Image (cartoon, rainbow, N blue to C red; front, side):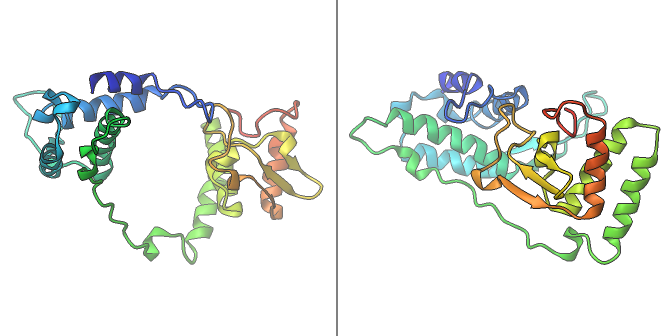
Amino acid sequence: MKDKMNERRKAYDRNKGRERLRDSLAERDDEVFHSLLLPHKISKKKLNQIFIPDVEEHRKWLDRAQYDKCQIKDLARHVPKMTYYSTLTLNRIVRFVVEAIDEYYMHSEYKSPAVALKLFPVTTKEKADEDFLVDDEIHRMFEVFKKMRSSLRYPLDATCADIFILALLTALRPGELKGVKKRDWNNKTHEIAITRTGEYEDERTKTEKSKASIIVILEAAEILNHRCEMLSDSNDFIFQK
């Protein structure tokens, strides 16, 4: 399993041409590996010595696993605050163990014992009014962003305000807006083409269905026109990285 972890650190998705896993993701994998796998006896076994009772027992152990939430390192002042791991974190290590075991049994005549290691169910909270901008909240939010744009204290504030205003007016994701170049904006038809996402190094969209062309209202067009006036090259990003 340690070999598998090393492979994950060097992972590269050739199908989508992704960059190597970001350091933050690799560090997170290391954290759950050392916290939720190494302390359990299943990590001491070879893959061919792991059976269904082992993975079932490991999952029960994960369900009870806790960590110390207290950030104070001074032992004299440190008061442990034990809390359970999130479902997201637990499923991260479950997927890793399943992947490692299934890979070993890929060409075996025996069934992989990982079939007994189920993901933890994710509970989805129902959306309520407080999860959305309603009534005059939208107008108040616009006023906040407009003040940010007019403030000369922090130049980045104006850029962030423009992104959030456009996100509210167009329903586009901030990552999609960050991927828009000057040539993607047609100031005559007020049409904006979404062909890439600024969150990825290879500039792909999140999915093929994410590619779109939409017509925006006048207020959004004014923001895009203003930002494009500051760019000389049609290949420049409207929101510079």
